[in-house]
Image 1: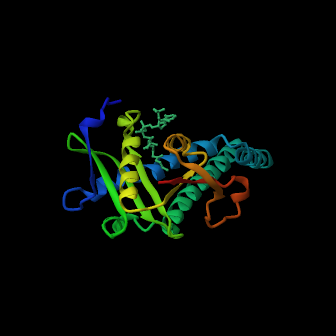
Image 2: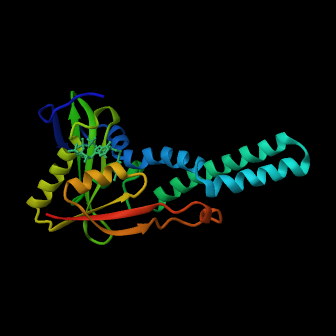
Image 3: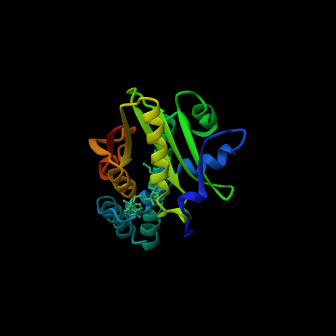
Length: 227
Ligand SMILES: CC(C)(COP(=O)(O)OP(=O)(O)OC[C@H]1O[C@@H](n2cnc3c(N)ncnc32)[C@H](O)[C@@H]1OP(=O)(O)O)[C@@H](O)C(=O)NCCC(=O)NCCS
């Protein structure tokens, strides 16, 4: 962990002439990429998923009297779920209303009124925050991320402060955000501390696959704050 204080960092608007967008994007996507690892790990311990998987593998092993076939069945089903998760993530990204994926990143964040800020420390990009008009025409905070080694230095609070100031200066009345109930519990604490209140709890509108009933859909929390 690197100890950093407020005075040592600068927060500047994202400038594609100055910042490498791929580096910025990596930090901005932390809220999406980190939960994928957590989700995969959680599924390993998900009894609703693992019990049927183990039982069916056991049935294969017993019915064929070949124990390795049972193990093979188990491993191939695990691989199936892993691939399913990957597909789920890719589909989510493709269907997402966030239009800043991949090559669209720079265009999206340099098109008014969307704004993205970059936190710099000793020449490195260590944090980001974005403010965009969402599909309900509400101002939404998104792409909040601080690189792992720099967390716990109140830098996310500083990033949120920048977005609040911008909102005040531009006369926005309310700002909103969404965060995963399970994977975003740290972020939830941060937002609550910064004055956001829960306005809605909903499930992700992700295409449903036959296996989905085994895996509870991830709940999302919408939060609002008056400026
Ligand atoms: C969420 C995140 C941005 C927090 O960044 P950070 O710079 O470490 O946060 P701060 O140091 O400013 O902490 C601010 C508040 O958040 C809460 N918080 C931060 N880290 C926490 C932790 N590990 N556990 C519990 N609460 C925590 C605390 O309330 C803290 O205030 P306090 O220190 O006065 O009690 C960072 O963990 C991150 O980038 N996570 C991955 C990406 C992500 O989840 N983004 C949000 C998507 S919606």
